[in-house]
Structure formats: C-alpha cells, structure tokens
Length: 100
Image 1 (cartoon, rainbow, N blue to C red):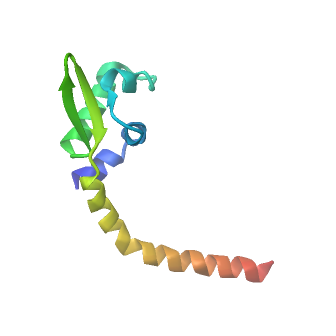
Image 2: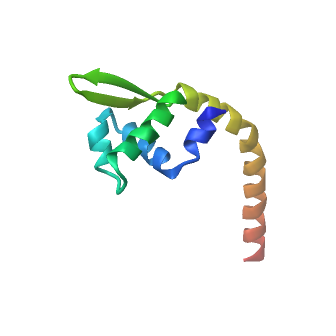
Image 3: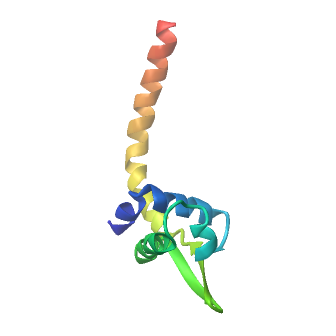
C-alpha cells in the first residue's frame, strides 16, 4: 500500500502531525525542518501521491491539508491486530501485578 510507504518516513509523519492542526503553506511547513525546502516539497509530493494530503493553490502559494480517507484504510488494517495486542498487554499487566 502506498499509504504505508508514505508513513514509513519520520519527516512525512511529522508533516502530517503539523497539518493535523490545520491547513498550512509549503513554506510554513518547511520552516519547521532543518532540511531544504525542495526536500520538504518532495516529501509533500509523496504524501499527495499517497492521497494523505491535498494541495490547493492560493495565488502563488500552495496550501496543504490532511485527507483522512487513506488513514481509514490504515485503521482498518490495524483493527485486525488491535485485539491481538490488547490480549498480550492484558496478560502482561496481569503478570506484572502478580509479581509485585
């Protein structure tokens, strides 16, 4: 899934976190990183191609926002594993309480 490939990079995950607070320009996003503006633009392109962000033009600026649709796909995939981990964590909690 291209969504998982896009989410694999920490810079792209951070971009999504920043965009979760609301629409931002590419320039304001780039100011948050110690990498070049063209590098941030490449990360934004990957997120756009994966469908995780939308871009719209406003004059000479591009404004980006999160598109939650593909994250529903990730959530559906993770749902299969939640009960597995919940059972394991409950067992760990029980064991920790027993050994105290």
